[in-house]
Length: 275
Image (cartoon, rainbow, N blue to C red; front, side, top):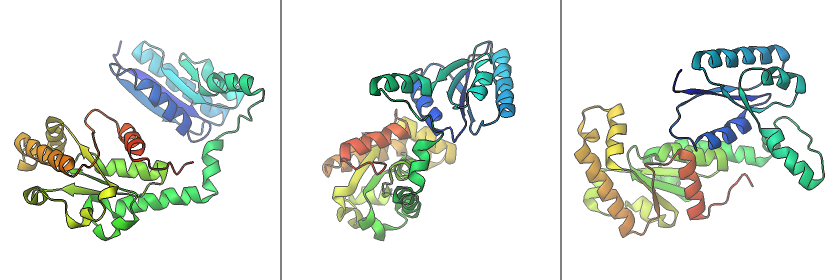
């Protein structure tokens, strides 16, 4: 029997709801390695039978029921998948049924309603524009547009600034820039002028030096840039600057990008542009 467990996120729409909730629940079981399979747009009985065959194959290979998170609306399609040897977590019935009883109203059970609602208004465009801003202002590439930023993430190279900025942009419409501190910045022991002007927008990311060295070695193995000594020096200097200037920061070592973004939103009071 394999130690891993297959997980299927199945939907007749994009699958975002099934994946988001499913991964949040799975994150509570850190000791189990999961093999995750995303299966969106399962909207015909033929495709459902193909999915059921995949689930059966995973069951026979691993000797354990695959976990299934689904947001399938069509009963015939759901029945086909339900008949497979998997453990079903029916997201809609689990959460909507109790809500229907409490609200004394019936759900419309509409496919993808939460996602379509944003495509026809300015919030969708806000997120796209925010993503472009994050890409244009990545790694200190364009300091002159910091006046447009909602937040500027600062930290050493490879501490998670770029993916966090993109996550904030894509999910919340936040205009997030980032600036990587270098040895030149550490030598001066001062904030660069471009950052000094926007101190109220700064938020720091720090990271364990050992973890940083491992990440950098994946990119430039055996280099001075990835050496434990260099990583330790940069992390210590970065934290010293953050503390000296009273810049809020979070240690990103043990957190996912989603968790880091959530902490930033909470600590800075940034408005969630998803409403």
